[in-house]
Image (spheres, helix red, strand yellow):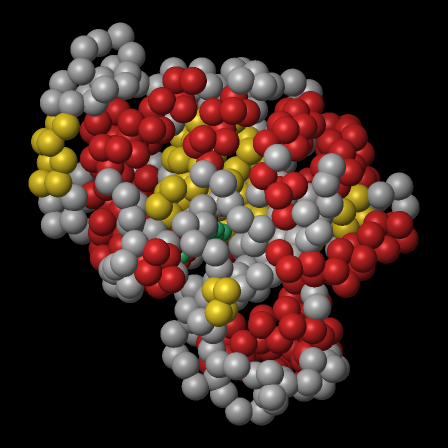
Length: 464
Ligand SMILES: Cc1cc2nc3c(=O)[nH]c(=O)nc-3n(C[C@H](O)[C@H](O)[C@H](O)COP(=O)(O)O)c2cc1C
């Protein structure tokens, strides 16, 4: 995208600022089977170095996903994209001692754990970091995770969000029951999915309350975010799609009596910057060649078709003429989302490939490149300023494409360019995550008990 910063755009939010989080620093460019020393990804000193760089760049938080089981593809271990994921809270305890301002957001699901236990662990990390903790609430859609707990399949999608609602309400009550300056009270809740009789053992958060994030794309997921979350992690990043997604979330939040812009939206993105446009493109091309092997390209197509295409797909040819025959999207990988209809998605891809003359390889390259910002620091800064001012999102969960230099480039080249444009802070606003994200007092204290999850969202959808 070419942005003319001098053009007088009619921006929805002319004074908006962007937040950067460091996401999964040993991210998707690594392939288990091709990595000479996978154990490098478990050297915590390397995490500490990256996080120190992110803090030098005034990043709001380090953000980790959760994989309770390695990813699978069509029933087999998927050795691409995942090099293993250490337990976030344990890692954060180590990193907290090495940092002073950056926040720590852990993705922790509500499907395979119990609220009293998680409330206690999160309260501990929030205390330990002096109020820098965040919780990315997910429900987890993959059946293979359930198998790790011998509960294959476990809960239907709608029930996962009902359980999440009860779970988060219980955590909230436990946190409220031990104020920082008070004595703990017993909590008793009985619901369809969650039973708690507990006395909290760790006092409340130094930041008023741990910051809630959410990652999920369905109507139930968005509704849950609108009620509970203060940050949303999403794959939606292209201008029109992102503007519509963020507007939808804010509309749902307003329907629950919130201002709407107290919800910060963070798409995940790769950022590749270099002194010249050509150098940045070369670097991005190199990462793409490493990551987008023929097998990976085929897997992206298979994630929609839902079956093995190894005998019928030529990645330098066209998409399969037949299928997909599955109606439900079972894989979410950023290129496809769980709310997508596979048949509609396939039709969309066929139309795009035909219109642009793309082979499968070119199509997948195109689909993945839309989640990258590549260019000179000033071009990328202009583009990001344009997007946040258009209210496409509030910040990025940045995955460096190489380490440590990928993050060094963002901090040393992009951050100053953003600061020059007045869209990035010159210093941390405070010492807590809540202060540094510019969030008001938590919505958690104001959310009414919900018996009718989905009803308000449906009303909002109807009105939109
Ligand atoms: C951007 C994004 C990141 C996610 N990260 C994780 C994760 O790290 N661990 C996990 O178990 N689920 C993760 N999820 C999956 C969600 O838990 C959720 O199960 C899934 O998106 C289905 O919910 P939905 O139907 O509302 O989209 C993520 C989802 C999105 C959209």
